[in-house]
Length: 315
Image (cartoon, rainbow, N blue to C red; front, side, top):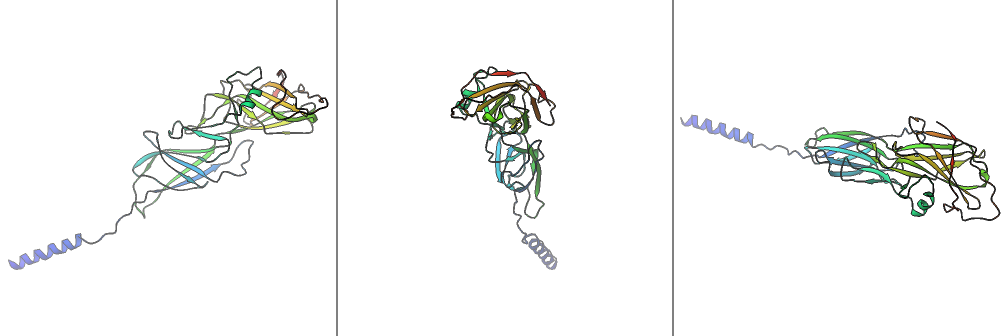
């Protein structure tokens, strides 16, 4: 009987020793790999160099509230996230010059837009007969490359386990257009040209990539003149707004500092225009040789009456 008891006692010792053996601790690894690709195929625009950083934002999937963020290289990197949660993710290129971001704390509400031009510009440009006192004139946006993922579940995991990899492609929410005027008679007397196009979208809702309903006028200042008298404007926009009226208004400042203003109706010319080029054919823009004397130049010309031009527009 004693022998049987001794055997049982030894058996219990063996089981206890086995159950108490040391096991390595599992260290939690909450790092997630984000892989970003950027689509630079843009009509009328060549991407020379992007900003060197992408902002990667995570939002709570249920509330839409901002949760965390990281600033990563263009190709992505590592983000630390609280596991066992579902997120919505948004990425965009950070630190653009003219494009600004609003409503950053709500996933469905975050948007991109641009700043207003100075009042001195607005007061001069709003003299057009087609405009209203509350017209909003803004700078054109920089290209903003945006990508998103929704309903992303991040499981709990330990070191040595397979890492979660999130792949996202970012593409621009901005369009680049060309406005070409076939001839300005007297181009040799032109010192500068400024433009405004009305009826364009104020911005873009980033999560859904949809245009903001409000329409604004975009200030144009990037152009090239040619010896044959033609002028080519190149401008960026969040897109046209069907509810607005698209009027291209030009302020042509001659070498004496006098302003000559022309309105050209380009309404409906954005629709189904895959080339994103509007060519205006007219012989009614004439700049006469100014009298002797010089003006201050810049966007402070003496304002004449706006002239509405009826012309053929080629898409």
